Length: 331
Image (cartoon, rainbow, N blue to C red; front, side):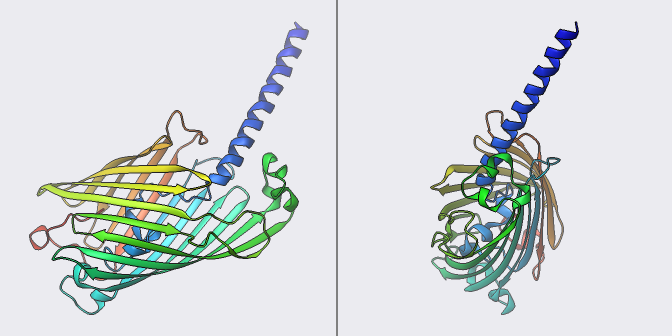
């Protein structure tokens, strides 16, 4: 009997070692993919992904908090804050979203994942060209300054054996990157289509320790459609496609139902990766939302849910009653 118990204990220890090794390998895989910042409620933060959409919804302040794989040590956490200023609103135009020509924004993003802490500062500018009575062509550009800090005391087993990261074991290292973003968008009150590119120069302008390769450029396509079905029901559909040469291509979609112009409920999916459910409320000058994301069964992401909180505050114009407008209130 004692021999059997001894063998069971040995098997149990071996299983623990195997599980820990699997977690370490998965963590290393995700550390690389986490350089791509995910936002499941991407339609609320169009200007971050494409500078051309700066000021598309007027002057406002936007923020989100994303806690990925909640409860796991070293799990990714992302914080975002941006301010957009539409000069058409400042000049008192009757319809600044259509008639205005210039908008600017400043965005700050902070992200931690495992041994890495990233801070990103983006200045963006957008100019609009009126094509028709209801269409605008928008061009945008931005400057991106990013700092990345590596805590060599928090490297995983797999990272410690990496030929590049292993050299920084037990020490703190910093890397700064300066790059540019560009964007192009066709917009209408009921739909939009946008193309954006982050890190046009491939992260070649760097300073500090070279503990990671330069970021390749990432191409992003966003599109959306919204329509009021009745006075108390509107539907909003958004899609988001991303492509980067060192990471898998990603397609995300979401759909929301806006009820009585006060509450929305929705669902979405990052194809082959994760699904989500979300809801939010609207007031006369702001909207607040919550999203819960869970990985799909065949995804290689680590288990555990993701929580995402969003808030958007209008700086000048409050939401108007339906009889004074034509478009649905949110994207």
